Length: 178
Image (cartoon, rainbow, N blue to C red; front, side, top):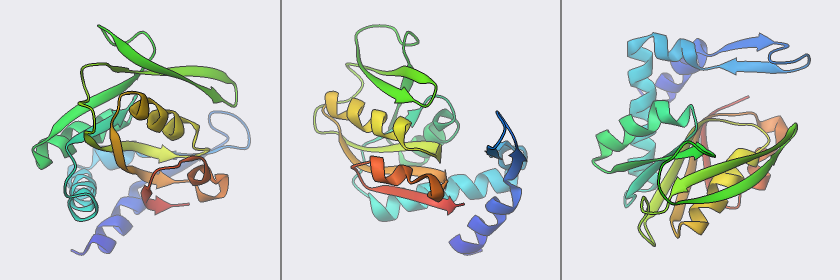
């Protein structure tokens, strides 16, 4: 099966839920992909193949809280490299770097452990979805504080109409666009 065929099969499994979590929002649900082991394997294969072809010298996969944790560790294991989580504030022990970012309903904070990224480490950030771009921009800012070199921001789904890509100053790749 080609990469394009795999992505088409993955897209068939993603469901849309109108008016969730609030009226006017069409929520794209990736969990049906995870419930089908063969499709989930296709997704992880496509993500890993993307990283191998686009950023072969990557040293660290960084997964964003929380759905980036679904893909990041599997990708890192397949690639034989480390996985580092970026968490919401107060969830990581030890010294952390933090960044505050704006959401449409207020502000939030991301943290990363200070000893988790070596200066200059080549990083790919992974998450399930890019919407308005605030979360991914914050992750890039945080990795800059940690002295990581972000090679790519990789998402499964991009909501293109929201123009989140415009907020992200690092290369951004998405498998599926709506």
